[in-house]
Length: 431
Image (cartoon, rainbow, N blue to C red; front, side):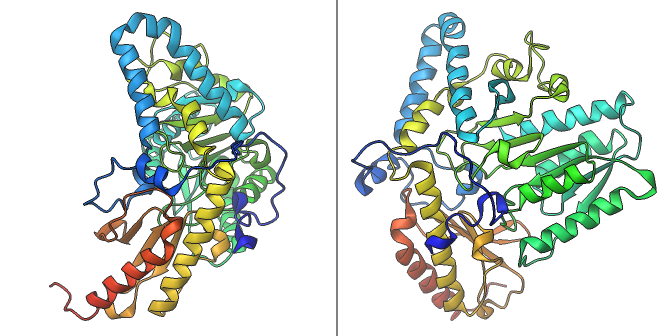
């Protein structure tokens, strides 16, 4: 499976990997399985942690660091605010700048969630309609697979302001990047009919349901060729799942959560805004006395609240570096083993994967066995979790796993799943 480990970079098998700072362990002594178990011993051992994609999992060492910052603030809030908060957030932004290969530090803002980042970008688009910079009926393109909250944000900001939304209807199952590119081009052509302008393209980097790595670099290039004003990449699952390189991808805006696959406590995300005159008009939707000082500064203070998740980022970098290969090694092992798991289940059940292995990262889709009598259900599995879904609704949970690094336990996981369904298929379905 090693040949697949870098085939999903930015959704493009031909992606050039630029030289840039990256996480890699400098220690000759890597974290052990016992230490991993200890880092996640706070997980309830009686409950199956099956939803890593929503809330992630935070190690004890990071939780302890977070609590340290919380107690520092509570012990002397004024001193913490004036002496520690801004320098701490600046340090986190600097590390993230290197991680994602952004050209300028002021292109990086830290916010509480990718949903907030989407609101910042879409609020700016709504103002462009309200101020007459865009015409009524101008177009925004988004994937049909787009996350529900982002779709609602587009409705709340863009549609109400007079924009017209066109969805890119992707096939399922997806068999190739070419299918995605073909449908995307069709949507762009439709958007430009009758002299309309496409003002914004919202592109997922990794969709969640269904789970597919989108060829973002290729789609961004097409947007440039076709004159799309702005490109926003929603990469909620990006950091820790696939390669994220701002200069390589070339989008105007890019956001990713850090609490899903990068071990930060919930919730924290970054928003990248490529340096341009457009960035000067971006503002946080929560307005404080920092308004007008730049989005990064505005986002660093939106009133009295808990900023500890933003301050532990350096500790998270240290934690990731305890693994062999750092974040690159984690991504590679997660991808290789989730593919191995998915192929094992598909073979045992006589079904198939929801997309080619090179189009998945740390999540994969497997068709459910016919004995369930249910059509078009999906089982979505990750190296950390397993979820059975229908129309986005959790149907049932299984696998009582209590630690990170389940790549150590691929065969055991598959054995449990196969055993469960062997039992399930020999019992009547509930009516």
